[in-house]
Image (cartoon, rainbow, N blue to C red):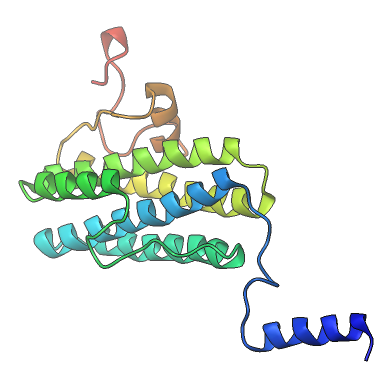
Length: 208
C-alpha cells in the first residue's frame, strides 16, 4: 500500500466518523469571532421575544422569535462548517457578558408595559442591523456575507413589524442606534410613507 493510498484511507476514515477537521473551511480570527457573537446576538433576540411574548400575549413576539431561531440555525451552520464551537447556552444565559447584561436590562424594561416591550423589540432590531452591516463590510468570506445579508433582510422586516405595532398604539418610535435617514428608508412602505396615519414630518424635520 503506497503512502498516498494510506493517506486517502485515513481521510476516508475521518469522514466516516463525522470528523470535522477534514471538512472545516479556513476562516479568519475576525470572522470566527463575528460568527460567535452573531450566534449569541440572534439568540438574545429570540430569548427576549419569547419571554415578552409570554408576558404580553402579542403574536408579533412569537412570530419573530421563530424567525430568530432560523437566524440562529443559519449562523450555527457556518460555525459547524468552519469547525468553531457553538457558544450558545441555555435560554436567557449568554457566554458574552455584554450580551448577558443587555438581555437582563431589556427583559426588565420590556416587562414594564406593552409599549416598552415593543420598543425593546425595535431597539434589538436596530442593533442587529447595525452589527450585521458592520460584519458584512468587514468580511471577505462570501458564504458568511451571504448568510448575513439574509439575516439583515429579516431584521429590516422585524423592525418594520415592531414600528407598525407601536404606530397602532399611537407611539411614534424614534431610532436609537440607526441614523434618521437609514431608519426612515427601512420603515417606509411602498407608498413612501411610514405605517399608520399622521406619520409625516413637521417643521425642523421632526415627525408630526
